[in-house]
Amino acid sequence: MNPIAGLSPFVGMWLNCIYSGKGVGMINLLLFLIIGIFLAGQMVGRTPEYLGKKIGAREMKLAMIALLVHPILILGPSGLFAATSWGMKATSNPGAHGLSQIVYQFSSSSANNGSAFDGLGVSYGLNNNPSPAAEAVPWDIAGGLVIMFGRYLPIVAPIAMAAFLGMKKSTPFGLGTLRDDTATFGCLLLGTIVIVGALLFLPVAALGPLADHLGPIPFGG
Image (cartoon, rainbow, N blue to C red):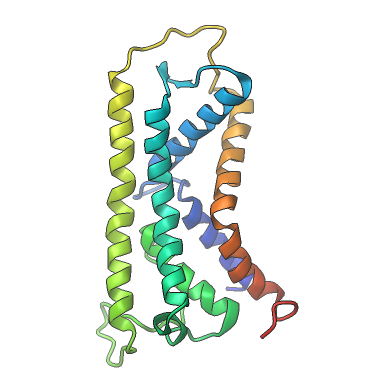
């Protein structure tokens, strides 16, 4: 795909809250929902609550932990491999597109997506690659670890958050309750997803797909 077209699956895997089929998209959407309600409650001076349950500091900490696991598992290994020969020798294209190949590999692993940018050629794979690159072992080990942690860690924190919310007494609906069934709140939720996602992944998007689309000037190479 062209760089901008390739940005589309990137965004889907980075946000990881477009739920359908198997996956944890619904869980991540609920995390954004909790964060959006908390932010809105702070801005308008109302106690943040969802389904009659007050959202406190403990729930917010768990929501942020679950939310930050995903970018850490993507950006951390991507930075490591991009800075070492494991990544530089494995990519088939130099510069921004090569970075996109590296980031896509870990984005797909963390999001449990299963797709890849062609060109890395570093995995033994299910087809018994007869001539895997020398970097195949580090890539396979790192990819496997990201898949494992990316699947289970984001589930533990939301389950704990649900348990804490379930132990709280329900608060009756009143005039001070922040409504979460309106179009206004839908826009707030969308804004939370876009802004938080942009803050987490905009730098790597600028260095990868966007630079690949605009390059080589003014990025050199």
